[in-house]
Structure formats: structure tokens, C-alpha cells
Amino acid sequence: MTSTSYQNSQGPNSDDSSDPAPPTTRPSIAALKRRASRRPPRVNLRLVTIISTFGGLLFGYDTGVINGALPYMAEPDQLNLTPFTESLVASSLIFGAAMGAIAGGRLSDRQGRRRTILLLAVIFFVATLGCVFAPSTAVMVGFRFLLGLAVGGASVTVPTYLAEMSPAARRGRLVTQNELMIVSGQLLAFTFNAIIANLSDDHHIWRYMLVIATLPAVVLWFGMLVMPESPRWLARHHRTAEMLQVLYDVREPADAEAEAEEITQAVAEDRRSTKVTWRVLRDMPWIRRVFLLGCGIAIVQQISGVNTIMYYGTQILEESGFDKQAALTANIANGVISVAATFVGIWLLGKIGRRPMLTAGVAGTAVALLLIGVVSMALPPGLGRACIVLSLTVTFLAFQQGATSPVTWLMLSEIFPAKIRGFAFGAAGFLLWMVNFLVGFFFLQLVNWFGISPTFFIFFAFGCAALVFVRRCLPETKGRTLESLEHEFSQRYSGTAATA
Image (cartoon, rainbow, N blue to C red; front, side):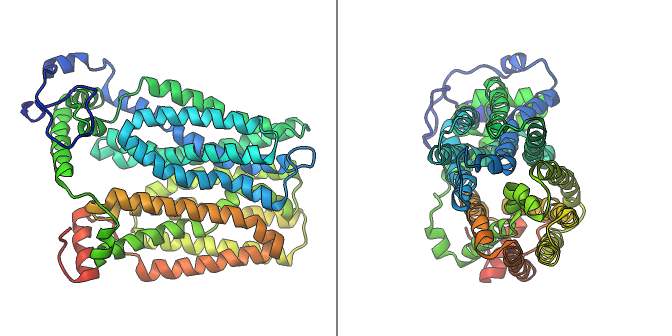
């Protein structure tokens, strides 16, 4: 393998121009090999995965900690929250995340994945401290929104960084480690909430629950200081020598050179492609159909009401008959089953089709919601009802995290044509976060207006509509190349071959 393909490269200060880069002097292949890390490439890649997925851990902790902290901050001698302001505190993070997902993607394209994650770590730290010391509801909502910007940015930047750092054969496994870190972060939040609540009667303990999130933020920042930039981002910015240096650190030499060749060719093709705009959706009906299908999948993932359990699980269990400390302790079961189910879901993705798996997930969550509503209506509050509701929330999360969630993110990465993949994935991700925000904001309002049972019946109806969508509209993508899927969709939805 010769190095002629990468001879034209600019230095590290080059801009993102699409013009060919002028030839410059750069280190030889032998010099780059000598500079490579002395650690084995697999060890370097493992370190990259561990450090960067602390962003996922923060994502999970910050979305899960509000579950236990909210009842304490709602007390009259604390922030004195009403059902409306409780919803605002919980959902302001999600609204921020929707904005952060869009901004984070664009920022990481411009400034680099590594630098963006470093910035997100700072925002995580500052926003967490702002929430910890918030003297009023308005300040809390403001810093929760800022925290949401970091959560949304991490939700798109960390998986992108992992995907671009991973070899093709291990990409699926390494990228899904971020999802495991998210649910692990939620489990840690539930666990620390219960421990702190059972060790102290101080109503300020919600501040202690929140401040723990500063620790992984510090680890993420210091860890990313010594992590490399994504080789694909470096290639797009004409920093070819640095790209190859990174590949030598995380690949065997022959694999590094072969992948560098592929990356260089792909970047050249990207620079020749037409910029994607909304006009593509208007002018090409088959692409519009696929785009709307992806949006539907994103809605299905959230319309089940999964985040009513993740954000308000403690209140649901209190309403069912547990006292506050018991509810916080029992809620750990939700975190444990989320982690276990995610492991199972990742294993199942290699065994069965996407369509039957998502069908089972949506049907299972809908039935669990129906039963929660029935039990809450038929049984009086007490230990018996509380234990049944807990078992049903655990069942709900088993179907959601074991089937619905992993299939959602996988299919969103598969179905979009190459021409609009990044654009469409970003738009679908924004829609997913916005539905998440609406569910989180209106759940307590619905409970206040109608009661707990009718509220779960409403989400059961949403689940039935989602099931109809999956059964009637969802294609099967397992075992198909991306190119064959694109060709099939173009024929199915327009009757013509793909020309995009």
C-alpha cells in the first residue's frame, strides 16, 4: 500500500474549503508509524470508548436524577413547585436537548468531535452547579435548559465520534456501548437518590443528588484532553497526516492504510455531492416518503410514554401506595431492568428482524400501560397496589429498552438514503426530543386534570396507534445493505430507480 492518495494535505490550521488542498510537506509513513502509541490499538480504542461514553453516562444521570430530586425540591420550604412548575422543571431539560441536538451536530462538524465533547463537559459541569445552587424555580428552569443543551449535544456527538473512531467490524458493538452508559447513568441516579434519601431527612438532599453529576463531567473533560480527534473529521479538513496518525493509534498498520484510502475517497465524493436542502423532499416523492417514515419511527419511540416512568417513576409509585423513601428505593428496579433489557436487546438485534422486534416492543409497552391504568383504578392505594404497579413498570421498561429503543436508533441509521442521511437523521432526532418534551411536560398536567388511570389509558391509546403504524408501514431492513434498501425504497415509493 503506497501513500500517494494522501500526499496532498494541509496543516492543522486549514479551513473547511471544498477546493483541493495545495501540496505541503508532511511526515513520511514510517515517521507516523514511529509516533504511534506504544499501547496495542485495541487498548487505545477501548480507552476512547470508555472516556467518550462518559457523555452518555451524564446524559443518563441528568435525565434520571430528576425522578428522585423533584419531590424534594417541590416542598414548600424549597422551590414550592406546583404541578405546572414541576412539569416545567422536568421538561425544560428535554426542550434544551432538542435544541442541543441540532446545535451539537453542526458544531461538531465545524469544530471537531473532540473539541465539541470538551465544550459539552464544561456545560455539564457549569449547568449542574447552577441547578444545585438554584434559589428559585426560574433559575432552576434556566440551568436545566442549559443542561439540556449539553444532553442533546452529547446524544448526537458521542455516537458520531464513536462510529468514526471504530473499525467497521466492531462499529455496532462500540456505538451501542453509549446506550448502555445512558441506562447505566439512569440506574446510578436512581441508586444514589435512594441512598441519599434513606441516609438523611434534610429536605435539601435534592441538591446533593444533583451535584454528583459534576464528577463524571470532570472525568469526561480531563479524559478527552488526551483523546484523538475523529480521523474522518480530520480528513474533511485536509489534515490527512493527522488522520493517518490517529488510525495508526487505533488500527493495525495495514488496516490503518486501507481505511485511510477509503476515507480519502469518501471525502472526495462528499465534496462533489450537492448540498441537501428541503427542496429534495419536495421534488423527490420517494425520498419524502422515507423521511416521513423515519419521523414516524422517532415518534413511536417516545409516544409510549417511556419518560413518564424515567422522570416521574417516584411519583407514580407514591401515588400507588409507597412512601417517599420506599418509592425511591423501589425505583432502582426500573434502572436495573433498563440496563439488563438493553443487553438483551442488543443480542436480539442479531437474531430476529427489526419489524417483529419493534412490533413486540410496542405491543408489550401498550399492554403494560393499560394494566397500570386498570390496577390504579380497581385497587385502593396500598402496598399491594404499589407492588403490582412496580412490577408493571418493570415489565414496561423490559419491552421498551429491550426492543423499542434499540430498534428505533438502528433503523434510523439504516433507512435514509445516502443523499439525505445526515440531514434526515438530525431532523428525526430533533422530532424525537420534541415529542419527549411534550410527553414530559404534559404528563403531570394530565394526571392533575384527569387522574392517574385515565392518563395511562390515553398513553395506551397512543400505543395502539403506534402499533398500527408499525404493522402497516414499517419495512424490514435486517440483512440488507444500505444500497439495496435505497434501491428498494425508490422502486416501492415511486416505481423508478434511485437517481438521488
